[in-house]
Length: 402
Ligand code: FEO
Image 1 (cartoon, rainbow, N blue to C red):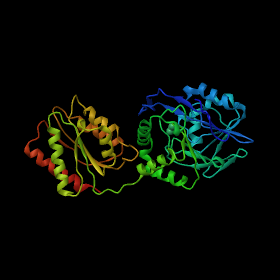
Image 2 (image 1 turned 90 degrees about the horizontal axis):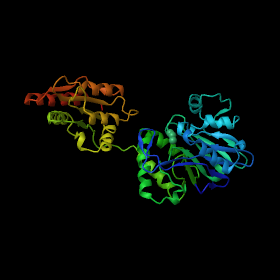
Image 3 (image 1 turned 45 degrees about the vertical axis):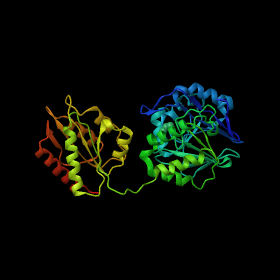
Image 4 (image 1 turned 135 degrees about the vertical axis):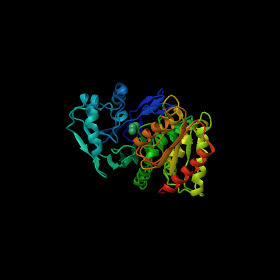
């Protein structure tokens, strides 16, 4: 990393990880990432903003030593304590035992079970609290569920600089650390959206709250904990606008009731279409689309499901289970926001039909509101079976509380 100074007496001590391709098990990171941390030097005291993943502890310490000596660091500000930020604290405390750690109440509870060491010097920051480092004032702004309950922002007043942690960050490794230096802007833009979708889309009301809390601050620089630093007139305004747009509550024109299915021999497909017909009889103005799961992009399907008003899942049974594409879709469900969503399960089966109950077990674990009935047919549905499927669709629609 060649650039370290990011503002007056503010330095990046970030660790770059250009080769990372999977983050937190679930996120593809085609452009690597960075574990950003920062040093703020006041005339009297020095603060460190966050640490790094434990695997990069040595690089992290080397970067700090290039800026200041560790003994001078009096405060460690933890805006959020997921281990990609807090992982180095236990080792850091061995080097700086008197370090004062400032975090939210929730953060203080999490840290005890992450560090598993005595931490007598934890200071709980409340919304609006400030500390004075000498000509440098840090103000703490709680930002719950962005994206953990412990999250907060830290605003450095004199430099109009917001340390935003995961918020407005990106898994994109930029060696020159500033947004002005990004050479593959399309890749960066794609990373920003993927990052938002993976981390913040389950927390849209909180995103709106977070944006509201910072809207009146004068901000020239946003220093997130992953990816490039955002500067005024470059990406700063753009990312804030993107977050506004992506977190917006969009009124729907129609009630959406998608039906997702897999069908080896078109039997489950026929049932899906008949159920759709039944729903349309009761709710003619609703949007009832059927999706053969293997013919569509999983991201689109999961978005349809997660934004639905109610949904149905159809599966055949192969080898005593639901088929993998169905289970893959169930794995994409937004577990935070799906609870109480009304849904039903159906399918054709050949032998014993475990697919339907196995799908229901997964849905029940997500605390959805399962319709009292399932609809299943042994092998090929007869005309009578398909009439019954229409009736099933009607009963499902009649029972919806929307
Ligand atoms: Fe970058 Fe929520 O950790």
